[in-house]
Each structure stands twice: as structure tokens, then as C-alpha cells.
Image (tube, rainbow, N blue to C red; front, side):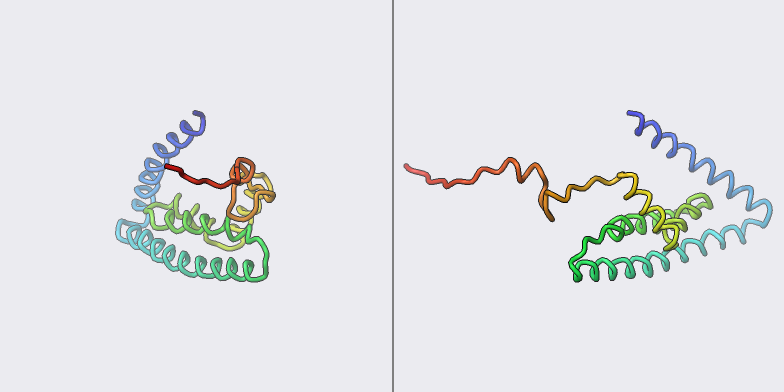
Length: 147
């Protein structure tokens, strides 16, 4: 329940903070430059999303070809998608968070934090593509229907 409250609070506060910041920047540099800045960050986000997404996918494939588990790439992929979505969202707070997800050095640190603090749980004993529950609850046998 606590996670739901935090998410709800963020969903309510971030738009108000974005509007407040956009109005503040607009009053300092003007409305047209503010709109251009927001459009520029959206275009930059789309370009970075494409570039970083292809690079991460290529590293993912290379890791699989070497027979290694692409742990960082599996974490970085969703981070790239979130970063691109945040940069496409109008506002400066979301742009800063989106850039943090799309710049390779900060994205690597975020992925490392996620892996080191076990925010993503994986079970190596289960095997690739199988869950631990599926292995332990399997009954083998034959079935024949007789009329």
C-alpha cells in the first residue's frame, strides 16, 4: 500500500512542479524560447532513444553470442525506454530524469545500483526461460484415454 501512495503522490506533484517551472522559465526567457526548448528536448530524446537503444541491443546480442548473461543490457533496455518517454514528456524535471536514463555513464550507474541492491531478483538455478516453480512442480508421465 505504501508504494501506491508514493506513486500517487509523485503523479500528483510532478505535473504541478513542471507547470510551475515552465511558467517560471517562460517569464524569464519568454514563451517562444521556452516552447523551442521543450521541442528541442523532445527531438533530442527521440534521437538519443534511437541511438542508445540500438547500441544496447547490439551489446545484448554480442553478450548472448559469447554465451554470457546480458545482465546490464537487460536492465539498461527498460531504462532507455523510460528515459525516452520522460524526454518526450514536456517539462524540465522529466527532461533531467530522462537524460539521466539516456546518458550511458549515468545509466550504467543506475543499472549497477539496481543490480547491487537486488531490486531485480533472478534465480540462476531455474535456468534460462524457466521459472523455479515450473521445475519443482513438474510431474512426468503418460496419458491414455480409454473409452
